[in-house]
View (spheres, rainbow, N blue to C red):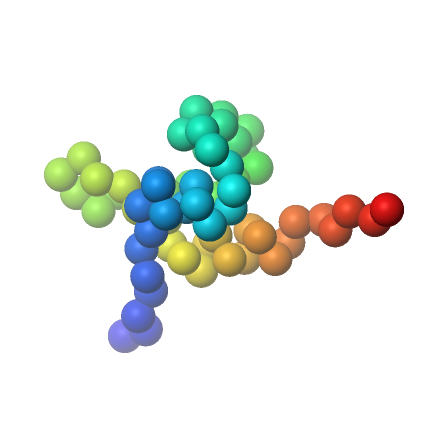
Length: 63
């Protein structure tokens, strides 16, 4: 079985530079951010691979 790291909301916010949980949830509702997985007991996590893929597919800004 492949090891997949699971990230908390705080870890995701730090990794992607979003400072608001509300912004993350709004983006999830708009289908512009990876959905979390429910690991039970009211806890949710994001797969690190999903977050890395999201980061890698962001359009590059040209100046």
